[in-house]
Image (cartoon, rainbow, N blue to C red):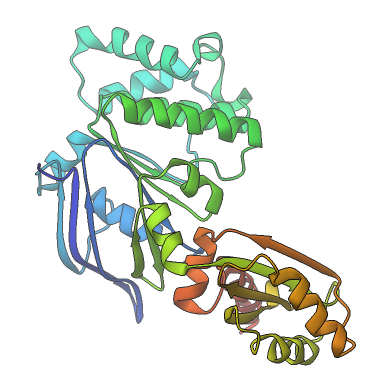
Length: 331
């Protein structure tokens, strides 16, 4: 079966920064495929190259078997992270403009607009100015515009960023319905739960490279064992956390351990299955007069996959980036 999207050795540089570093992707028709990673990992640049909005420096891209930019644009829809709507147009007028840009046959435009308005439940807002829309309505109209020409592939960059939980869940359900109708969906997100809930397969990206790829279940099973998070204080000193970690790494069921600065220097352990793990940890720390502020145990998550591959959580990376940006601005 021909892939819906096939990307081979994709590279893109901005000055001296290698934003995309040899990415390979093969996405089957009718899948929801997720790109997960921190801000700045190269997700948006990868999407823009696939959508022919950015010229890559190397590699090849096929969408539904097409390699030429014009043909690729005809078979995919793209919804950017930032909603860009003309506030002086109504929702219907904006869709009419979009239809003209896609050169849709004049006789089909009215029917297509009616279909996407119904699909996105926008009929009651269609003749209101988009400047009066809420954030959720703007995102739904953006999705309607991306689907107007009935693309085989829908590409979404952070489709629910900044939306409330009810709107996010509604968009998730809509995307599942699109998948069931045969549309292939490629989306980026740094929301772990979004990718976990939606994606049939996922590529985790860091520093422009794919560091892990597979189904969410496959990736989490590779981490192995449960995760235990221990906080010895609400905001522990790094040295104190390291001392506690050294005490725990000798326990027979502990496979690995890291200090998570983003969680107030919490201790993250990956352990082999053991029903007495929590009590053994508490006993070990108590023997050394180390008190526990909190302790929680959970199954592996996609963040654990990222942690296992890079030594940091996605939140760690984004906090580090946020700390660097003000320094750069001062320079």
